[in-house]
Length: 533
Image 1 (cartoon, one colour):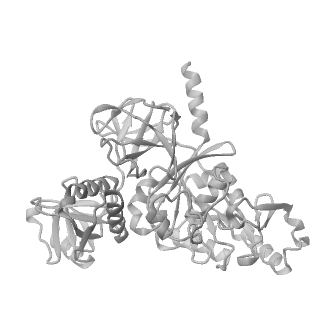
Image 2 (cartoon, rainbow, N blue to C red):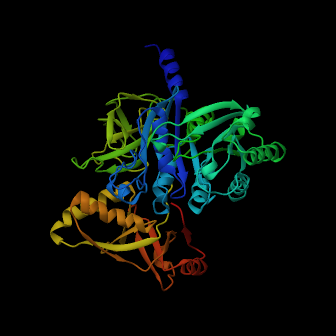
Image 3 (cartoon, rainbow, N blue to C red):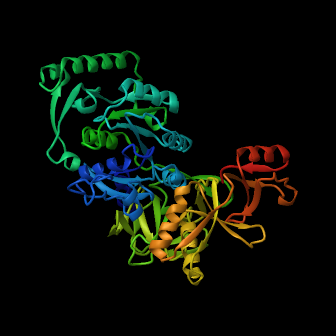
Protein backbone atom coordinates (compact mmCIF):
# COMPACT_ATOMS: atom_id res chain seq x y z
CA UNK A 1 0.00 0.00 0.00
CA UNK A 2 1.51 3.41 -0.98
CA UNK A 3 2.69 5.64 1.89
CA UNK A 4 0.17 8.36 0.98
CA UNK A 5 -2.69 5.85 1.23
CA UNK A 6 -1.44 4.62 4.63
CA UNK A 7 -1.04 8.20 5.85
CA UNK A 8 -4.54 9.25 4.77
CA UNK A 9 -6.04 6.10 6.33
CA UNK A 10 -4.17 6.85 9.58
CA UNK A 11 -5.31 10.50 9.54
CA UNK A 12 -8.96 9.50 8.95
CA UNK A 13 -8.87 6.92 11.78
CA UNK A 14 -7.25 9.44 14.15
CA UNK A 15 -9.89 12.09 13.35
CA UNK A 16 -12.59 9.57 14.31
CA UNK A 17 -11.13 8.95 17.78
CA UNK A 18 -12.39 10.59 20.98
CA UNK A 19 -10.42 9.47 24.04
CA UNK A 20 -11.70 10.84 27.32
CA UNK A 21 -11.99 10.25 31.05
CA UNK A 22 -14.92 10.89 33.38
CA UNK A 23 -14.04 12.77 36.56
CA UNK A 24 -16.24 13.42 39.58
CA UNK A 25 -16.62 13.24 43.33
CA UNK A 26 -17.81 9.82 44.56
CA UNK A 27 -21.52 9.15 44.05
CA UNK A 28 -22.08 11.93 41.51
CA UNK A 29 -23.29 9.29 39.01
CA UNK A 30 -20.12 8.72 37.01
CA UNK A 31 -20.39 4.94 36.67
CA UNK A 32 -24.11 5.22 35.86
CA UNK A 33 -23.23 7.69 33.09
CA UNK A 34 -20.62 5.25 31.76
CA UNK A 35 -23.26 2.56 31.54
CA UNK A 36 -25.62 4.86 29.65
CA UNK A 37 -22.96 5.78 27.11
CA UNK A 38 -22.61 2.06 26.38
CA UNK A 39 -26.40 1.80 26.12
CA UNK A 40 -26.66 4.61 23.56
CA UNK A 41 -23.75 3.25 21.56
CA UNK A 42 -25.68 -0.01 21.13
CA UNK A 43 -22.95 -1.99 22.90
CA UNK A 44 -25.37 -3.18 25.56
CA UNK A 45 -29.16 -3.55 25.30
CA UNK A 46 -30.10 -2.76 28.90
CA UNK A 47 -28.27 -0.79 31.55
CA UNK A 48 -27.73 -2.05 35.11
CA UNK A 49 -27.48 0.40 37.98
CA UNK A 50 -24.48 0.49 40.31
CA UNK A 51 -26.64 0.20 43.40
CA UNK A 52 -29.12 -2.25 41.97
CA UNK A 53 -31.57 -4.23 44.05
CA UNK A 54 -30.28 -7.41 45.63
CA UNK A 55 -30.01 -9.99 42.91
CA UNK A 56 -30.34 -7.33 40.22
CA UNK A 57 -27.86 -6.22 37.61
CA UNK A 58 -24.42 -4.81 38.28
CA UNK A 59 -22.77 -2.41 35.90
CA UNK A 60 -20.77 -3.77 32.98
CA UNK A 61 -17.85 -1.46 33.70
CA UNK A 62 -17.18 -2.53 37.31
CA UNK A 63 -15.67 -6.01 37.16
CA UNK A 64 -13.99 -6.49 40.53
CA UNK A 65 -16.06 -8.19 43.23
CA UNK A 66 -15.25 -5.52 45.79
CA UNK A 67 -16.51 -2.81 43.40
CA UNK A 68 -19.82 -4.60 42.97
CA UNK A 69 -20.17 -5.13 46.74
CA UNK A 70 -19.52 -1.50 47.64
CA UNK A 71 -21.06 0.21 44.60
CA UNK A 72 -17.93 2.20 43.78
CA UNK A 73 -15.30 2.18 41.03
CA UNK A 74 -11.87 1.14 42.33
CA UNK A 75 -9.93 0.34 39.17
CA UNK A 76 -9.71 2.49 36.08
CA UNK A 77 -11.48 0.63 33.27
CA UNK A 78 -10.84 1.26 29.58
CA UNK A 79 -13.38 0.49 26.88
CA UNK A 80 -13.99 1.29 23.24
CA UNK A 81 -17.26 1.64 21.37
CA UNK A 82 -18.50 3.19 18.10
CA UNK A 83 -20.99 6.05 18.14
CA UNK A 84 -22.44 7.78 15.08
CA UNK A 85 -19.28 7.69 13.00
CA UNK A 86 -16.87 8.24 15.90
CA UNK A 87 -14.76 5.69 17.78
CA UNK A 88 -14.93 6.45 21.49
CA UNK A 89 -12.30 5.34 23.98
CA UNK A 90 -13.69 5.76 27.48
CA UNK A 91 -11.44 5.75 30.53
CA UNK A 92 -13.69 5.14 33.53
CA UNK A 93 -11.67 6.28 36.53
CA UNK A 94 -12.12 5.76 40.28
CA UNK A 95 -14.02 8.61 41.90
CA UNK A 96 -13.05 7.78 45.47
CA UNK A 97 -10.26 10.06 46.72
CA UNK A 98 -8.28 7.08 48.07
CA UNK A 99 -7.61 6.08 44.47
CA UNK A 100 -6.70 9.52 43.17
CA UNK A 101 -3.22 8.40 42.10
CA UNK A 102 -4.69 5.82 39.70
CA UNK A 103 -7.04 8.51 38.38
CA UNK A 104 -4.23 11.04 37.88
CA UNK A 105 -2.23 8.52 35.86
CA UNK A 106 -5.25 7.63 33.76
CA UNK A 107 -5.92 11.29 32.99
CA UNK A 108 -2.57 11.44 31.19
CA UNK A 109 -4.05 9.06 28.59
CA UNK A 110 -7.11 11.27 27.95
CA UNK A 111 -7.52 14.01 25.32
CA UNK A 112 -10.55 15.50 27.08
CA UNK A 113 -12.62 14.96 30.23
CA UNK A 114 -16.27 14.95 31.25
CA UNK A 115 -16.78 16.45 34.70
CA UNK A 116 -19.92 15.08 36.38
CA UNK A 117 -21.49 17.27 39.06
CA UNK A 118 -24.35 16.32 41.39
CA UNK A 119 -27.15 18.91 40.96
CA UNK A 120 -27.84 18.86 44.71
CA UNK A 121 -24.23 18.99 45.95
CA UNK A 122 -22.46 21.14 43.38
CA UNK A 123 -18.65 21.20 43.05
CA UNK A 124 -17.19 18.82 45.66
CA UNK A 125 -13.66 18.24 46.96
CA UNK A 126 -12.51 15.45 44.65
CA UNK A 127 -13.95 17.28 41.64
CA UNK A 128 -11.75 20.29 42.43
CA UNK A 129 -8.62 18.13 42.70
CA UNK A 130 -9.27 16.27 39.45
CA UNK A 131 -10.16 19.47 37.60
CA UNK A 132 -6.85 20.95 38.79
CA UNK A 133 -5.01 17.99 37.21
CA UNK A 134 -6.90 18.55 33.93
CA UNK A 135 -5.94 22.21 33.98
CA UNK A 136 -2.30 21.37 34.74
CA UNK A 137 -2.21 19.03 31.73
CA UNK A 138 -4.31 21.40 29.55
CA UNK A 139 -7.10 18.84 29.10
CA UNK A 140 -10.38 20.46 27.90
CA UNK A 141 -13.35 19.70 30.17
CA UNK A 142 -17.07 19.34 29.41
CA UNK A 143 -19.40 19.69 32.40
CA UNK A 144 -22.47 17.51 32.92
CA UNK A 145 -24.75 18.53 35.77
CA UNK A 146 -26.35 15.22 36.68
CA UNK A 147 -29.29 14.04 38.80
CA UNK A 148 -31.66 16.73 37.53
CA UNK A 149 -34.49 14.25 38.24
CA UNK A 150 -33.88 14.70 41.99
CA UNK A 151 -34.31 17.78 44.20
CA UNK A 152 -31.34 20.04 43.56
CA UNK A 153 -30.01 23.57 43.55
CA UNK A 154 -31.04 26.23 40.98
CA UNK A 155 -29.14 25.78 37.69
CA UNK A 156 -27.90 29.39 37.71
CA UNK A 157 -26.39 28.87 41.19
CA UNK A 158 -24.62 25.72 39.97
CA UNK A 159 -23.20 27.57 36.97
CA UNK A 160 -21.89 30.33 39.24
CA UNK A 161 -20.30 27.80 41.59
CA UNK A 162 -18.51 26.04 38.71
CA UNK A 163 -17.00 29.37 37.67
CA UNK A 164 -16.00 30.51 41.14
CA UNK A 165 -14.78 27.17 42.54
CA UNK A 166 -12.81 26.14 39.44
CA UNK A 167 -11.85 29.56 38.07
CA UNK A 168 -13.12 28.84 34.56
CA UNK A 169 -15.82 30.39 32.40
CA UNK A 170 -18.93 28.21 32.13
CA UNK A 171 -21.25 28.39 29.13
CA UNK A 172 -24.62 26.59 29.10
CA UNK A 173 -25.16 24.63 25.86
CA UNK A 174 -28.62 23.54 26.97
CA UNK A 175 -30.97 24.45 29.82
CA UNK A 176 -33.31 22.30 31.93
CA UNK A 177 -37.08 22.58 31.78
CA UNK A 178 -38.24 21.86 35.33
CA UNK A 179 -36.26 20.01 37.99
CA UNK A 180 -36.68 17.09 40.38
CA UNK A 181 -39.82 15.11 39.59
CA UNK A 182 -40.81 17.95 37.21
CA UNK A 183 -37.67 17.67 35.07
CA UNK A 184 -39.32 17.07 31.70
CA UNK A 185 -36.85 18.29 29.10
CA UNK A 186 -34.07 20.54 27.88
CA UNK A 187 -33.85 23.44 25.46
CA UNK A 188 -30.76 23.78 23.25
CA UNK A 189 -29.73 27.43 23.31
CA UNK A 190 -28.09 27.60 19.87
CA UNK A 191 -31.24 26.67 17.90
CA UNK A 192 -34.03 27.07 20.54
CA UNK A 193 -35.11 23.47 20.00
CA UNK A 194 -36.79 21.61 22.87
CA UNK A 195 -36.54 17.93 23.76
CA UNK A 196 -39.29 16.65 26.05
CA UNK A 197 -38.66 13.26 27.65
CA UNK A 198 -41.08 10.44 28.40
CA UNK A 199 -40.44 7.99 31.22
CA UNK A 200 -40.48 4.38 30.02
CA UNK A 201 -41.82 1.34 31.85
CA UNK A 202 -38.23 0.03 31.99
CA UNK A 203 -36.97 3.09 33.86
CA UNK A 204 -33.42 3.98 32.83
CA UNK A 205 -32.61 0.52 31.48
CA UNK A 206 -33.57 1.43 27.90
CA UNK A 207 -33.31 4.47 25.64
CA UNK A 208 -35.65 7.32 26.49
CA UNK A 209 -38.41 8.50 24.15
CA UNK A 210 -38.32 12.19 23.14
CA UNK A 211 -40.64 14.75 21.52
CA UNK A 212 -38.96 17.54 19.55
CA UNK A 213 -40.55 20.97 19.18
CA UNK A 214 -39.50 24.62 18.83
CA UNK A 215 -39.22 26.64 22.04
CA UNK A 216 -41.97 28.98 20.83
CA UNK A 217 -44.49 26.10 21.14
CA UNK A 218 -43.42 24.98 24.62
CA UNK A 219 -46.22 26.85 26.42
CA UNK A 220 -48.89 24.85 24.60
CA UNK A 221 -47.57 21.49 25.76
CA UNK A 222 -49.63 19.79 28.48
CA UNK A 223 -46.62 18.71 30.55
CA UNK A 224 -45.25 22.23 30.96
CA UNK A 225 -46.90 24.48 33.57
CA UNK A 226 -46.96 28.27 33.41
CA UNK A 227 -44.48 28.46 36.29
CA UNK A 228 -42.04 26.10 34.54
CA UNK A 229 -42.28 28.12 31.31
CA UNK A 230 -41.80 31.43 33.15
CA UNK A 231 -38.74 30.09 34.97
CA UNK A 232 -36.98 28.78 31.88
CA UNK A 233 -37.76 32.01 29.95
CA UNK A 234 -36.35 34.09 32.82
CA UNK A 235 -33.16 31.98 33.02
CA UNK A 236 -32.56 32.01 29.26
CA UNK A 237 -32.95 35.80 29.12
CA UNK A 238 -30.41 36.18 31.94
CA UNK A 239 -27.97 33.90 30.13
CA UNK A 240 -28.31 35.96 26.94
CA UNK A 241 -27.49 39.14 28.84
CA UNK A 242 -24.87 37.97 31.34
CA UNK A 243 -23.83 34.47 30.22
CA UNK A 244 -20.46 33.58 28.73
CA UNK A 245 -20.21 33.13 24.98
CA UNK A 246 -18.88 29.78 23.77
CA UNK A 247 -16.42 28.91 21.02
CA UNK A 248 -14.79 25.54 20.41
CA UNK A 249 -11.39 27.24 20.30
CA UNK A 250 -11.86 28.62 23.84
CA UNK A 251 -12.99 25.19 25.01
CA UNK A 252 -9.93 23.44 23.53
CA UNK A 253 -7.68 26.04 25.15
CA UNK A 254 -9.25 25.32 28.55
CA UNK A 255 -10.73 28.83 28.90
CA UNK A 256 -14.39 27.76 28.98
CA UNK A 257 -16.32 24.61 29.89
CA UNK A 258 -19.58 23.86 28.04
CA UNK A 259 -22.33 22.91 30.52
CA UNK A 260 -25.10 20.36 29.95
CA UNK A 261 -27.99 19.25 32.18
CA UNK A 262 -29.19 15.64 32.35
CA UNK A 263 -30.28 12.68 34.44
CA UNK A 264 -28.09 9.63 33.83
CA UNK A 265 -30.47 7.52 35.93
CA UNK A 266 -33.48 8.15 33.65
CA UNK A 267 -31.41 8.79 30.47
CA UNK A 268 -32.94 12.27 30.12
CA UNK A 269 -30.51 14.40 28.09
CA UNK A 270 -27.84 11.71 27.69
CA UNK A 271 -28.10 11.18 23.91
CA UNK A 272 -27.98 14.90 23.08
CA UNK A 273 -25.00 15.27 25.44
CA UNK A 274 -23.15 12.42 23.73
CA UNK A 275 -23.90 13.96 20.31
CA UNK A 276 -22.44 17.28 21.48
CA UNK A 277 -19.42 15.56 23.02
CA UNK A 278 -18.52 13.88 19.71
CA UNK A 279 -18.86 17.25 17.96
CA UNK A 280 -16.81 19.25 20.48
CA UNK A 281 -14.16 16.93 21.93
CA UNK A 282 -10.75 16.89 20.25
CA UNK A 283 -9.28 13.95 18.37
CA UNK A 284 -5.78 12.81 19.41
CA UNK A 285 -3.10 15.45 18.93
CA UNK A 286 0.68 15.77 19.27
CA UNK A 287 2.35 14.85 22.58
CA UNK A 288 5.51 16.13 24.24
CA UNK A 289 8.40 13.76 24.94
CA UNK A 290 11.99 13.93 26.18
CA UNK A 291 14.70 13.12 23.64
CA UNK A 292 17.85 11.17 24.50
CA UNK A 293 19.88 14.40 24.62
CA UNK A 294 17.44 15.94 27.10
CA UNK A 295 15.78 18.18 24.52
CA UNK A 296 11.98 18.24 24.36
CA UNK A 297 10.40 16.98 21.16
CA UNK A 298 6.88 16.63 19.78
CA UNK A 299 5.42 13.28 18.76
CA UNK A 300 2.89 13.85 15.98
CA UNK A 301 0.14 11.18 15.80
CA UNK A 302 0.26 10.96 11.98
CA UNK A 303 3.86 11.73 11.01
CA UNK A 304 5.60 9.59 13.66
CA UNK A 305 5.63 5.77 13.39
CA UNK A 306 3.96 3.71 16.12
CA UNK A 307 4.57 4.79 19.73
CA UNK A 308 2.71 4.26 23.00
CA UNK A 309 3.21 4.33 26.76
CA UNK A 310 1.99 2.26 29.71
CA UNK A 311 -0.34 4.21 32.01
CA UNK A 312 -1.77 1.30 34.02
CA UNK A 313 -1.02 -2.28 35.07
CA UNK A 314 -3.72 -4.64 36.31
CA UNK A 315 -3.23 -8.23 37.48
CA UNK A 316 -5.68 -11.13 37.64
CA UNK A 317 -8.49 -9.56 35.60
CA UNK A 318 -9.26 -13.15 34.65
CA UNK A 319 -9.25 -15.14 37.95
CA UNK A 320 -8.76 -18.40 36.03
CA UNK A 321 -5.40 -17.17 34.73
CA UNK A 322 -2.74 -15.49 36.86
CA UNK A 323 -2.20 -12.84 34.21
CA UNK A 324 -1.13 -9.21 34.24
CA UNK A 325 -2.37 -6.67 31.73
CA UNK A 326 -0.48 -3.53 30.70
CA UNK A 327 -2.76 -0.78 29.39
CA UNK A 328 -1.09 1.22 26.59
CA UNK A 329 -2.22 4.55 25.20
CA UNK A 330 -1.30 4.71 21.51
CA UNK A 331 0.15 8.14 20.73
CA UNK A 332 1.26 7.84 17.09
CA UNK A 333 1.21 5.57 14.07
CA UNK A 334 -0.70 2.37 13.43
CA UNK A 335 -0.53 -0.60 15.76
CA UNK A 336 -0.69 -4.10 14.31
CA UNK A 337 -1.13 -7.33 16.23
CA UNK A 338 2.10 -9.03 17.36
CA UNK A 339 4.30 -6.19 16.09
CA UNK A 340 7.88 -6.01 17.42
CA UNK A 341 8.77 -2.69 19.07
CA UNK A 342 11.60 -1.14 21.05
CA UNK A 343 11.16 -1.13 24.82
CA UNK A 344 12.93 2.11 25.71
CA UNK A 345 13.63 1.45 29.39
CA UNK A 346 14.92 -2.10 28.88
CA UNK A 347 16.77 -1.21 25.69
CA UNK A 348 15.59 -4.26 23.78
CA UNK A 349 12.98 -5.38 21.27
CA UNK A 350 9.76 -7.03 22.47
CA UNK A 351 6.70 -8.46 20.75
CA UNK A 352 3.36 -6.92 21.71
CA UNK A 353 1.57 -10.26 22.00
CA UNK A 354 -2.13 -11.01 22.41
CA UNK A 355 -3.41 -7.40 22.28
CA UNK A 356 -7.00 -6.95 23.39
CA UNK A 357 -9.64 -4.36 24.13
CA UNK A 358 -11.95 -4.62 27.12
CA UNK A 359 -15.48 -4.05 28.27
CA UNK A 360 -15.52 -5.22 31.88
CA UNK A 361 -14.17 -8.80 31.78
CA UNK A 362 -15.00 -9.38 28.11
CA UNK A 363 -11.88 -9.33 25.96
CA UNK A 364 -11.73 -8.83 22.21
CA UNK A 365 -8.54 -9.45 20.23
CA UNK A 366 -7.22 -6.31 18.55
CA UNK A 367 -5.84 -6.70 15.03
CA UNK A 368 -5.01 -3.02 14.56
CA UNK A 369 -5.33 0.21 16.52
CA UNK A 370 -4.72 3.91 16.03
CA UNK A 371 -3.71 7.04 17.99
CA UNK A 372 -6.03 7.57 20.93
CA UNK A 373 -6.87 3.87 21.26
CA UNK A 374 -6.24 1.98 24.50
CA UNK A 375 -5.05 -1.60 24.19
CA UNK A 376 -4.32 -4.24 26.79
CA UNK A 377 -1.17 -6.32 26.37
CA UNK A 378 -0.36 -9.45 28.38
CA UNK A 379 2.50 -8.40 30.64
CA UNK A 380 5.10 -11.14 31.21
CA UNK A 381 6.86 -8.96 33.77
CA UNK A 382 8.54 -6.55 31.33
CA UNK A 383 6.30 -3.49 31.72
CA UNK A 384 6.27 -0.82 34.42
CA UNK A 385 3.97 2.19 34.70
CA UNK A 386 5.29 4.98 32.48
CA UNK A 387 7.24 2.77 30.04
CA UNK A 388 7.52 4.03 26.44
CA UNK A 389 7.51 1.66 23.45
CA UNK A 390 7.93 2.60 19.79
CA UNK A 391 9.22 1.50 16.39
CA UNK A 392 11.96 4.16 16.30
CA UNK A 393 13.25 4.61 19.88
CA UNK A 394 15.20 7.70 20.89
CA UNK A 395 12.71 9.36 23.24
CA UNK A 396 10.47 8.86 26.27
CA UNK A 397 7.04 10.29 26.91
CA UNK A 398 6.86 12.61 29.92
CA UNK A 399 6.96 10.78 33.31
CA UNK A 400 3.61 10.10 34.95
CA UNK A 401 2.90 12.03 38.15
CA UNK A 402 3.48 10.27 41.48
CA UNK A 403 1.95 11.59 44.69
CA UNK A 404 3.32 11.26 48.17
CA UNK A 405 1.54 8.61 50.29
CA UNK A 406 -0.34 9.64 53.40
CA UNK A 407 -0.86 6.36 55.27
CA UNK A 408 1.67 3.69 56.21
CA UNK A 409 1.57 0.23 57.71
CA UNK A 410 3.33 -3.05 58.32
CA UNK A 411 1.63 -6.00 56.64
CA UNK A 412 2.30 -9.68 57.27
CA UNK A 413 0.65 -13.00 56.40
CA UNK A 414 -1.15 -14.85 59.19
CA UNK A 415 0.36 -18.11 57.86
CA UNK A 416 4.17 -17.89 57.45
CA UNK A 417 3.96 -20.85 55.07
CA UNK A 418 2.28 -18.54 52.53
CA UNK A 419 5.11 -16.01 52.55
CA UNK A 420 6.00 -16.70 48.91
CA UNK A 421 2.44 -16.06 47.69
CA UNK A 422 2.26 -12.99 49.96
CA UNK A 423 5.48 -11.52 48.53
CA UNK A 424 4.33 -12.19 44.98
CA UNK A 425 0.93 -10.55 45.54
CA UNK A 426 2.31 -7.45 47.27
CA UNK A 427 4.99 -7.05 44.60
CA UNK A 428 2.42 -7.37 41.82
CA UNK A 429 0.12 -4.74 43.33
CA UNK A 430 3.03 -2.38 43.95
CA UNK A 431 3.86 -2.63 40.23
CA UNK A 432 0.24 -1.73 39.44
CA UNK A 433 0.40 1.30 41.74
CA UNK A 434 -2.22 -0.01 44.19
CA UNK A 435 0.27 0.51 47.02
CA UNK A 436 3.88 1.62 47.34
CA UNK A 437 6.55 -0.54 48.98
CA UNK A 438 9.08 1.21 51.20
CA UNK A 439 12.12 -0.13 53.00
CA UNK A 440 14.13 1.10 55.95
CA UNK A 441 17.42 2.74 54.98
CA UNK A 442 19.31 -0.46 55.88
CA UNK A 443 16.77 -2.75 54.11
CA UNK A 444 15.86 -4.52 57.36
CA UNK A 445 12.16 -3.65 57.38
CA UNK A 446 9.46 -3.53 54.69
CA UNK A 447 6.54 -1.05 54.89
CA UNK A 448 3.58 -0.46 52.62
CA UNK A 449 2.25 3.01 51.85
CA UNK A 450 -0.78 4.43 50.05
CA UNK A 451 -2.57 7.69 49.27
CA UNK A 452 -5.78 6.49 50.97
CA UNK A 453 -6.90 3.87 53.49
CA UNK A 454 -9.20 2.11 51.03
CA UNK A 455 -6.12 1.11 49.01
CA UNK A 456 -5.05 -1.08 51.97
CA UNK A 457 -8.53 -2.63 52.00
CA UNK A 458 -8.16 -3.45 48.30
CA UNK A 459 -4.69 -4.90 48.91
CA UNK A 460 -5.95 -7.23 51.65
CA UNK A 461 -9.08 -8.12 49.66
CA UNK A 462 -7.07 -9.07 46.58
CA UNK A 463 -4.44 -10.98 48.58
CA UNK A 464 -7.28 -13.00 50.12
CA UNK A 465 -9.22 -13.65 46.88
CA UNK A 466 -6.45 -13.85 44.30
CA UNK A 467 -3.54 -15.28 46.30
CA UNK A 468 -5.40 -17.08 49.13
CA UNK A 469 -3.39 -15.20 51.75
CA UNK A 470 -4.94 -13.78 54.93
CA UNK A 471 -3.01 -10.82 56.35
CA UNK A 472 -2.63 -8.68 59.47
CA UNK A 473 -2.22 -4.93 59.03
CA UNK A 474 -0.55 -2.77 61.69
CA UNK A 475 -1.03 0.95 61.03
CA UNK A 476 1.90 3.29 61.64
CA UNK A 477 1.55 6.75 63.26
CA UNK A 478 2.42 8.81 60.16
CA UNK A 479 0.00 10.89 58.09
CA UNK A 480 2.16 12.59 55.43
CA UNK A 481 5.51 12.28 53.68
CA UNK A 482 7.87 13.92 51.22
CA UNK A 483 10.80 12.97 49.01
CA UNK A 484 14.10 14.23 50.43
CA UNK A 485 16.63 16.02 48.24
CA UNK A 486 19.97 16.41 50.02
CA UNK A 487 22.29 14.31 52.16
CA UNK A 488 20.20 12.10 54.51
CA UNK A 489 22.93 11.94 57.17
CA UNK A 490 22.82 15.72 57.70
CA UNK A 491 19.00 15.95 57.72
CA UNK A 492 17.70 17.02 61.14
CA UNK A 493 14.60 14.89 61.69
CA UNK A 494 11.83 16.05 64.04
CA UNK A 495 10.74 13.61 66.75
CA UNK A 496 7.66 12.12 65.04
CA UNK A 497 9.35 11.15 61.78
CA UNK A 498 11.11 8.27 60.02
CA UNK A 499 13.37 7.98 56.97
CA UNK A 500 12.81 5.17 54.44
CA UNK A 501 13.53 4.37 50.77
CA UNK A 502 10.96 3.96 48.00
CA UNK A 503 11.05 1.41 45.15
CA UNK A 504 13.39 3.67 43.16
CA UNK A 505 15.78 4.00 46.15
CA UNK A 506 14.79 7.63 46.72
CA UNK A 507 14.80 8.73 50.36
CA UNK A 508 11.34 9.48 51.77
CA UNK A 509 10.68 11.13 55.13
CA UNK A 510 7.50 10.08 56.97
CA UNK A 511 5.92 12.60 59.35
CA UNK A 512 3.38 12.30 62.15
CA UNK A 513 1.50 15.35 60.88
CA UNK A 514 1.81 18.46 58.72
CA UNK A 515 3.21 20.46 61.64
CA UNK A 516 6.20 18.08 61.90
CA UNK A 517 6.72 18.46 58.15
CA UNK A 518 6.75 22.25 58.46
CA UNK A 519 9.21 22.07 61.38
CA UNK A 520 11.47 19.80 59.29
CA UNK A 521 11.47 22.30 56.41
CA UNK A 522 12.37 25.15 58.80
CA UNK A 523 15.17 23.14 60.42
CA UNK A 524 16.73 22.03 57.13
CA UNK A 525 17.09 25.02 54.77
CA UNK A 526 19.77 23.14 52.77
CA UNK A 527 17.44 20.23 52.03
CA UNK A 528 14.33 20.09 49.83
CA UNK A 529 11.14 18.19 50.73
CA UNK A 530 9.18 17.48 47.54
CA UNK A 531 5.49 16.57 47.52
CA UNK A 532 5.22 15.20 43.98
CA UNK A 533 7.65 12.86 42.26
